[in-house]
Length: 300
Image 1: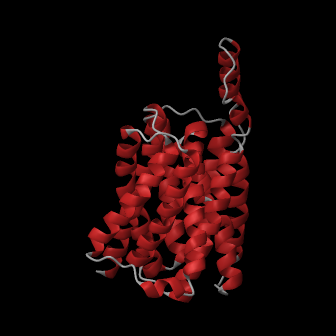
Image 2 (image 1 turned 180 degrees about the vertical axis):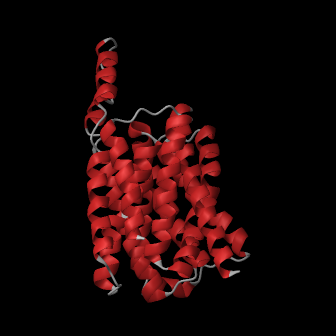
Image 3 (image 1 turned 90 degrees about the vertical axis):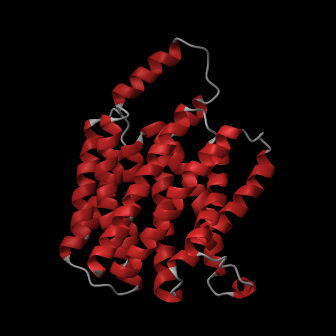
């Protein structure tokens, strides 16, 4: 029964993660402001979590908890990472975005081996090396896609976002690095502070939402209804992707839970991106995805 419950939790985490990537792809198509939708999404996550838990888990004592600084740091990383993921999906597609995030185990697993003295083998070390190689391969741009984009730009007026386009290679790198720090801190919270998954996820989203609302006052862009709707639709799978993943971590341990979740998400994201959204990937990109799958298998 325990094994079936664990498989159920990991499966739901995978489905929710795929839903998030697809929604980011649709955000660009329907001209939804990613930042505003992300902020609304975190508010929805808190409401969804409280309904699922059947309680509001905020206590005054939390303000003096040892883990509060880490939660605040995670809140910043969550909102920054989600924006990087959205930009990566927009510029590189679902497959590349998923690999950029999921290859974070190439650094988070070595941290677990070093800090928590987890056992390791030569095979696991090879997997870590391949994970880092895959990050390099998936960031090699598609030359055909770039040439097509260049010819289009030459036939139209100058685009004010062209400067952003030139720096777009930083988006998957940013998504990768932020995912590394998120996984390391989540492992630490689980190993040291033993927070209950539902409570931990609700507090995390509340902090991220609070910080995001502050950003809305800074940018002062008018909030449109489509952004609110996008945030509501995004919030439900986002909450459960973290909640069920944390349940898997509690039942299997961080290295195994992250690896199982990541390998399936990477594979299915590549299939969905290629078949549904007709994403064009270079040979190097496909090599990177293949190496990523092998790496996650070896690390597991």
